[in-house]
Every structure is written in C-alpha cells, then in structure tokens.
Image 1 (cartoon, helix red, strand yellow):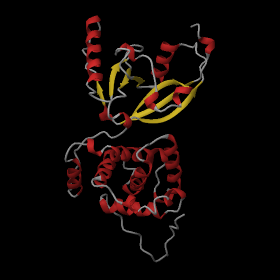
Image 2: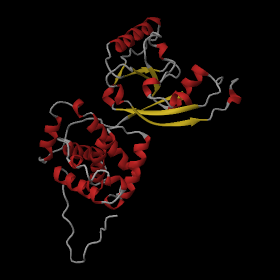
Image 3: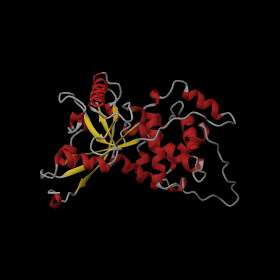
Image 4: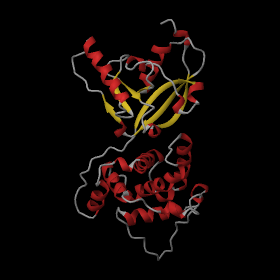
Length: 310
C-alpha cells in the first residue's frame, strides 16, 4: 500500500481545485496505490488518458451533489477510478465488476473518506457519462469546460443517475443473456407477435405481476432480477387524466404499437393494470440501444405456496 507518512518538515501538498489538473493528480494517486486491480492498468498507458470533457463533467457532477461533506478531495479518486476502469471492463457494470470495484475502493481508503455506497454513486454516474457521452446535448462539454474557468454556477441540468427496473424470472431464464429473456404481460399492450419485455418500476410490483400472471403453480424457483438504465432511454406514455374507458385504452394500445414499430425509445413507461398508481416499463429488444440496458443482480425468491389458495 502507499506510504502516506511525510517527513516532519515536509510541507503539505497544495490543494488542487476541480478541473483537469485536479483529476489528473487524482488518477496518479490512484495508480500509485499497489493492488492487483491497479496493476492491470499500469502496462496500458492509453487508459491513463482523460477523455475530452470528462474533467468538466466530474466538476459539474460534484457540484450537483450539493453536499458539503463530500469534498472534491474525497470525490476525485472515485471519478479517477471510474475513468481508469471503464475502458478495462468495456462499460459493463455487472455484479462481478461492482464487486471488484468495491474491493479496489477499499484499497484506495487512504485517498478518500467516502464509504463505498457514496463512491459507487459517483462511479456509476461517471460510467454512464463515459458510455454515452455522444447522447449529451451538443456543446455541453465545451460549455462545462468554459464554466469551470469562470466564477459562476453551472446551470446545465442533466440527470445522469441510473434508473432501476425489476422483473421476476424463472431461475433457468435468469441465467440466460437478456436478449433471450421472455416475459408475460406485455400482451396487455402489444400483439403477441411483437417482441418486448415487461419490467416493473419497483420490486413489489414485479412480484405482484408475477403472482398475477403465473400464480404459485410452477415449481421452478423464481429470481428477482435488478436492471438499470440511463434516464434518456425512457419515454412516458401520454396520459389523459380521468379517461379510462374502452376508447382511451384502445388509444393507448395504438400509441404503444407505434412506439414499438417505430423504435421511438428503448423503454416506454406505462401505467400498471395490476396496481393503480404504479408503472410498468416496456422494453423493445430490437432497439439499437438494447445493449445499454444494464443487468445487475438476481436474487432467489422464497414464495410461500401455502397461501396459493388466497
């Protein structure tokens, strides 16, 4: 591990403000800590390059936290770790990657006071930026770079936090790649020959959908799968409050069919027919952004089949 003890007469290193130089120094500090994880990056000097616009993003995102307890000195190593690790893993933030990054963050404890749950938010936001910076508004990088040199607030508003989604699957299905997943319930909105996945915006709704559509009859174990996606990949179905008659439902089905046929977005938020006030998420597996839907963990569910008669 890095020896952080300084001679008694050695001056403390000067603080570095957010920006390219501060992030560059943070990356050097991260690389200087000895660990098996970091050693994978040392021979690959190209990974030490900071992508254009990333320092401005890191500064902007840090300001958006609006938390005085998260200083730049504590946040910069998280952004640096994200920048170094993103290319190595190809932008696939799955459970095994998260586990390795959590171990690495423990090695980097001398550089930051942030616990992993806080650092994880910064790492995930940075990965979202690095995976999809072409989808950001044109000129945003230049505007952030310019604002970082000015004594003014950054007014650009952009939600880069990932949105969670949930689905209950058979254990055998959960082990397959997402492209091979099959769900039920999307037939409420689409013809049976239109490929789509039905997710839920909450784990409780995912379980309720499962029990409504499948019941307790099947013996194969079920798993609750957790996914996530960038907010810009989702659009909402236009609603007319107070209209829930047959004509309104037909119009919704027409709008959903057009959404699928024209690949208007990867995900579409629709009202849940199972639980009023909740929402389901339809996924179009033919959409070119399908690979951006991120899979996290799958947890085994223990259903009490003694209640199947209720």
